[in-house]
Length: 329
Image (tube, rainbow, N blue to C red; front, side, top):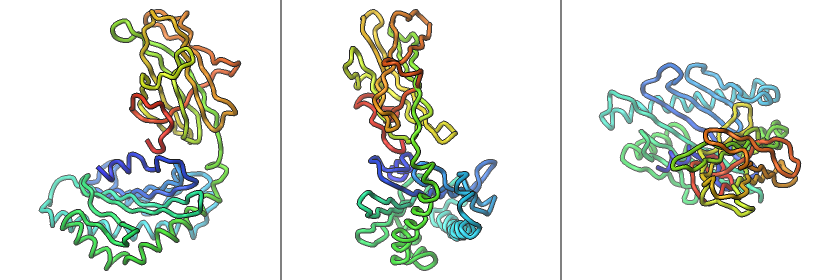
């Protein structure tokens, strides 16, 4: 569960000034759109670059990365990825033989990176899995690799001999990774530090047992952190709200939906309350019960004279506790 949960939330649950994440995926049976080795690198929540065994070259994922970094940088990123690619190829073969798995689909996933915190301290980590099971982690406090089984122990010994010893890996996490992160932050500060206002739309639809589902569709906001709460007569209804989570919009911003079921026969004022760092004051978007009829979608205008907007959220697929946005959900 460890690595799967980590990949599901690539970034820490608490906001930090900067983070870099490297996700390596290796498969035994590649196919269309699924190379046998892929590396994706993120700075904060923005795609930095991608390398695959098909392209054999690190390619920028952001315009400013392509413009700011020179050929030397991309050569270095390609060298690092190819170094790991060679290692993974040998490891996959070794593990298949060790576990007597000469056929079938098998996968290695590795997640590692570094965080630069507000007090200028550094937090780094490494964790990988084989076929979805935790496999090998690096404990920086004790300066040791923690192996889950005999296969991981053999992998650990080979890693020390062929890739990095303990001191070398510690240097990578504390020096090399942070150096890459600082460089990306400097070049990409206009993108990474920008603030984009959310837009919000409130609608309704008939639900079961005569109930009505109210929905806030929220899009176009950055950064990701946000709070959204449904209010009934000005009081929070956190325990009754639900969300499918925050998703990338494909343009560098985010979108989400927050819903709540109500009894339309009970007269009340419902509104979505939105807080985001791009807003000077919270945004409130009201739902107009007077326009409700079975199967009809009403679109209400925001209160306080704010123009039609779309809201923001935080926690994914969860009911209750409000939605103070969790990073990487």
